Image 1 (tube, protein in one colour):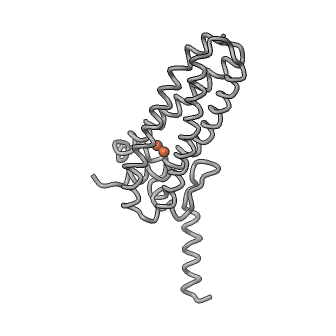
Image 2 (cartoon, helix red, strand yellow; image 1 turned 60 degrees about the vertical axis):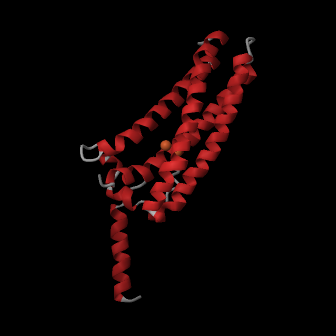
Image 3 (cartoon, helix red, strand yellow; image 1 turned 30 degrees about the horizontal axis):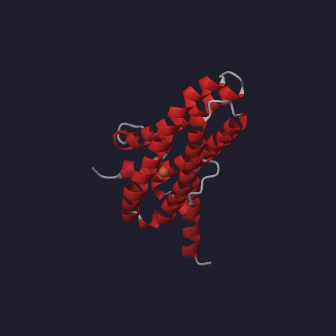
Length: 198
Ligand SMILES: [Fe+2]
Ligand SMILES: [Fe+2]
């Protein structure tokens, strides 16, 4: 190994010491895609210099997480016997319709507008945005399943515990995928927004 090469690998090792880890334990973001994340780590996202550019996106995600959590809580309350069938249906039916609609819209805006724009700004992040785009396909399939189950629930005046159990499983699957997707997306997107000029 030449001295120059040795210096370079030492530099790379030093850089590693100061690079941050993505926030999701199973993050799919590769180290090469974190150059912006390391420049603008999560503890700065809400600071005065950046919040006006980053908080809009984060707020939308906070609302998605909140709606997803409320749906799961309602579903658990029914399974635990805290809600009867009528209460469960009155609490969950409209909320699921709204959640599915808003999430489909959110994915559409990202797929058709934001992600292509970010790839034009940073072509080296294309593979990262392709992962997020594939998440949307999987999430949209889960949301379609949830909508079908919800439509059946809307017609089910008579208690159907099997249907409630299936719907609950779809909610759990969506929560898992959303948790990883939203976190990976934020790690990739928020530094782009924060470091963007103007
Ligand atoms: Fe997304
Ligand atoms: Fe998003």
